[in-house]
Image 1 (cartoon, one colour):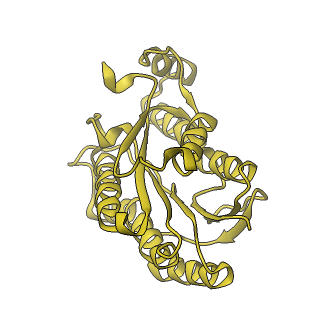
Image 2 (cartoon, helix red, strand yellow):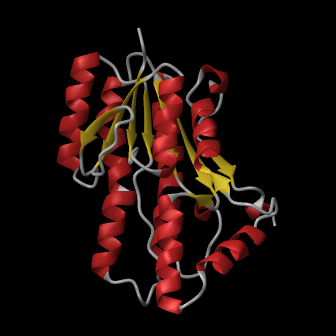
Image 3 (tube, helix red, strand yellow):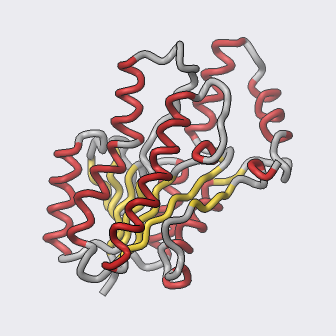
Length: 241
């Protein structure tokens, strides 16, 4: 019987690559997103809505009797320091980046306890280091790292593993949207900004979504059964500098 995986934000970027990777690995994959995708089983769901996520997960759990893998990937970026971050901006970012992960894990765990399973939260290198003009985003990714660690300890007795992947600068639609926004505000040339971002990486290039997806595929597989509560960095060496 095929195992069941649920991915949030699986219509673009790292999420889409992860859905594709898990399908290739034989999983039945459900994608919870507000943007439609023909890859995997798409479910229109705003993951910042705790009740909506709960209803979706309950239906899937009852349908399949278990959930084996969850990947909390949905999130967005916010470029601002603390003075330029309003309460509303902070609430909206945390509702998606943090509360979205909270609701997914909370509602999926009852369907994972019987057979065990694997949880991966897509955090960021910003769970480990600080970056300028990234107050709320940085804070949200640090929260995901903490969520992975505490969940790993609380549910190890059920053979449920929880880890966070911490990607560096990955070339995704989210990356391009952030660069476009910066260029629009500053008047900078996008090609030059992109080249500067590449030059900041020890490997002299940006990471690709498929590389992160392959890492996630490994973490949820039987090859990683002794890995839990960890922050797995995939950043081309950026945080080693």
